[in-house]
Image 1 (cartoon, one colour):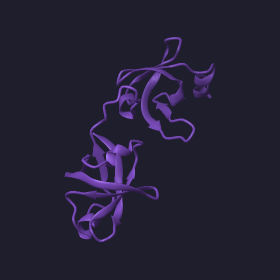
Image 2: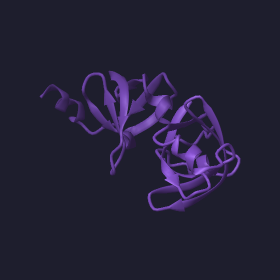
Image 3: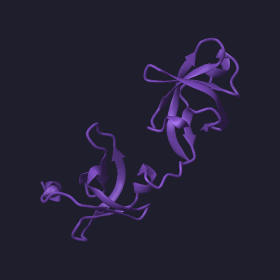
Length: 155
């Protein structure tokens, strides 16, 4: 399961909550979506955009007190199958190979960056996601990087 957001706080008196998504896929809060919060399973009845998140009504939450009890919980969901998307969970642990076939390290995390997400390798190298040319999920990532990018890791 993937982290897709968190419950920030309750909203109103009828059990609505403010959900802040960490996913760019807003269908995570579409009616009928199933999310997991700790050991709870929550089904979205409705949602609407509000400020920096979404006000969500869950089938299992009917009062402000129940909504308050969910504050701060991380929301998780199954991965969405989309062959055209690049998913963070498919990159972590993969070996990065440059355009010459040289292995450059293993992806330890993906850093959120406004210009382009960045792969952080166990070698300390940072590689913008936009340089990825091929992905074998969870196994191998091929990158085509400018000359000298990996020289920076030796400094």
